Length: 382
Image (cartoon, rainbow, N blue to C red):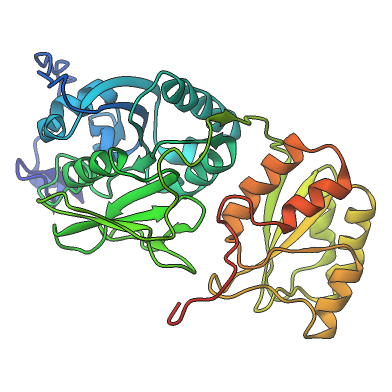
């Protein structure tokens, strides 16, 4: 079956024998005139890392790939200029599955430089697949007095159903608001009616392709941006602008991993993690793994590895004091992660281990709520 992309942006499949194949040349680079901006509007910085929001057709594979930079995004979405005045900066042009802790560090430094330069807010364009990881990384690494807003799109700009323009404009509005923390702004529904503002340490991509894939987990969203009016609604729990002094804490220990428990998992799997400095367990229910793994986990802890327990349930808190398995895990030195999301726990582990050499202090930090990643209460219906 041959797949053909139509001018409408949709694909059709046809039998190969009915096609005549030609070598199509690479398209000429798009030359856009400089975008006219209103200097009287607030200044925002667009820091680009790539992703679907910055993508176009790749004729090598017939699929979309990240090929545009921050300046091209501004040219492609002229509505942005009604919200703010922009400077643009490209860090990487990659799809987000290629993110690494090293890139998080480079991103944090770039964002911090823009904040110190005095911008009203920072927009980070990013692929959606690992956006939650990067939002958590920026939350831990950058103390910010201004909004840091991550935004992407589920569907590329060549598709009629693309969400890139609305998401970008709503993100820009959020970046000019009274918000004072790291957030993700994406479609709230499948319609083009409003975007949701999610805390950077409590957000997760919950669907592979829907435009409303992102949800706040364990808490209500921080707010909304109505479209097309761009009216901002901020919740009282959202950190406000200028609450924090700017600071950069960009050290990370990348020698950490998530281990997803499953029935029948054998203890020898832990041998592969002997050289790791931190392990996040994604356990069942209240935070459990099979009893056969506990001796190996105790050996890892005694060897200096920090081990934190999270839950595959996503909603609710880890409590290893209810069943004997949980109490045995605590006795082995496993740290309860509360209701922290597993991927956020991984980033937090990297950050804590990179910044605190004292074991007693770093275990205390791992148990503490540092950036809103651990909720003090459960919300009805969540």
